[in-house]
Image 1 (cartoon, rainbow, N blue to C red):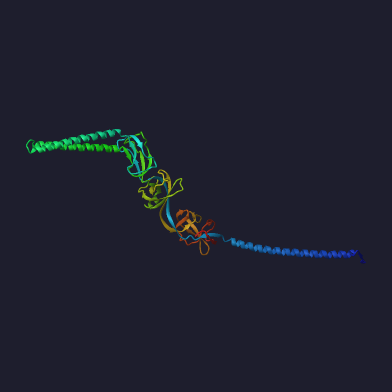
Image 2 (image 1 turned 180 degrees about the vertical axis):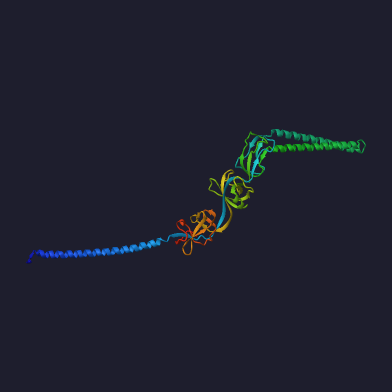
Amino acid sequence: MNYESRFTETGSEIDLLSDEERARRNRRWIIIAAAAALAVVALITIFALGGDKESGGAAAGDGAAKAVPVVTVMVPGRDVVDRVVSATGSLAARREMPVGVVGEGGMVARVLVEPGDWVGAGQVLATIERSVQAQQNAQLAAQINVARADARLAQAELERAQALVGRGFISKADIDRKTATRDAAVARVRVAEATLGENRARTGRLDIRAPAAGLVLTRAVEPGQVVGSGSGVLFRLAKGGEMELLAQLGEADLVTTPVGAKATVTPVGSSESFTGEVWQVSPVVDPQTRQGTARIALSYHKALRPGGFAAANIVRGSQEAPMLPESAVQSDEKGNFVYLVDKANKIVRRDIKVGEVTDKGVAVSEGLTGSERIVSSAGGFVNPDETVKPVLDKAAR
């Protein structure tokens, strides 16, 4: 039996239900909540399955894209490349002039130059004490005066004798004797003069002079030193201050290096380079080292010191050739090669012959025209006939 009572208390209303009706109502709400929960779970499952399918499709697409590798390619074109050979050698004076004692020698009185000084042709470098030679010159000068006096007397006697010939006081034979006496006196004057000139020349040779204008390289004499013909070299001069590099070249490079080739010379320890020219190529090759000498003429500069070591780059000519970065050139037992990308985007191996190697890259003398698409890097990760996706390197030509 159901009872329903309603009480009204302070404007509020309280419903009183039986236990059976309250239970049925609770069961209905539970069923509704369970159905809603199932619906939510079903929706979540549907969305999850759809997302997995999309992710799977994207992953499959990425896998397909990754299957074709991307490579960087370049079209090198053709550049003018200097054919350069590198060499090293010693610096020296192009024309070195050793200066020593020319005359009899003696004690050095003065030394007038130092290494590094510039001197003119005939300039005195050092003087030798000459007091004895000065006295000899004075003696010879006096002898000349005596000979001249004898010659004047002989001439006067001859003239007087010739005046008396017409009177018959002097015979013709006497005239001949007086003429001979006069001629002998004149000859003695000339001998005395020649002797004095010779002695003065000997005295002048006591001055050690520069044979030509140039730069003093070394000095091996001091005041007070006694020198003679066996004293050796006292000074070394570089004629005109001209220098040269004695560049050592291999036999093959020596043959292809022409006289007149331009060269750039850099002394060891210097960041400055100097321009020179090959003026002589050795006609012989050392049988031990298989090298010869190319002599590179250089103008004077204080950084060019004879005996120093220097490196040279000799330009033997120029040619047009494709220029590649070193990363593009590979090698194996067959030689040097590069990888190309053909019109079908497949990798093709191309054998090449490498020319000059410079700071700009590697010149290819044979095997390329310059219009090919060259794999510029990572060539070791691709194989011939492999399909790739080429990307042009904008930083390279």
